[in-house]
Image (cartoon, rainbow, N blue to C red; front, side, top):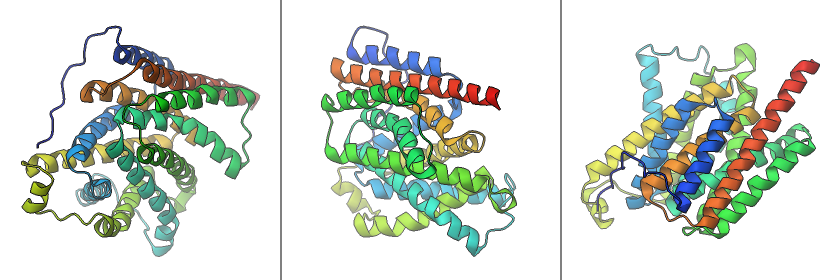
Length: 336
């Protein structure tokens, strides 16, 4: 069994749940505007390649470790060929400080791939649209930031929409659901910690080097775990046992997934250095709009009206949340 090819064109607009979902999602993305288009493209391609690989190669930890390996190779090449200056100081103390970031980065990406391997791509990213909820909760818990009433009200349609989409999701299972929820928590924790590390002045790493170091550490962390837990051996016999008749095609898709994975997360880190973690989470939510719509058409997932309505409601909540945060940011700037 090989890896399926990706259709190049989307289906024409209609009145099916799939088309209704596309209309609502595109409207939400357009209204939120100006959020990391390059990251959207790379993320969409990564999810497409990744899902195709995970459908025939059900080893999410191994896939994640491979992606970290590809990213580490890209990072080393950037330094060797002078595309970006290596860190001026990369001592034991710096690595010690970055290690917690690498740990949550590893866990977040591993959980995302576990979810992608268990449920539909669109459902994984519908759940991950709850990033604003976790961003607000973690900020209140660890930073003492009390959310305003309008912000809390915008979280209601996000939570309600995800709940509605979950109960009507054809591919629903608890493994995929809880993995996506876990990745939300870890990624929001990573963003807050990364932002603090980036703003340390001379002792901090720039966004590119920080992400490169995190990627390398994540590769070192996850590789032995993947070997111990999944223990897949890259041999013709192992691929045959999975029913894969063209291992080269699968490995090529895995390589492309790794390149897109590194590209979109690098862009994400570049944006994170310029904006707050909350604004970054808004951009991520708009990115998910593109991924959700594209994946529905690419993989032809069955979408019920209730499922489409739940996803549209969650995306509407994301749009309202982004507008409230922007308005509050403008008011704060005027007050200052």
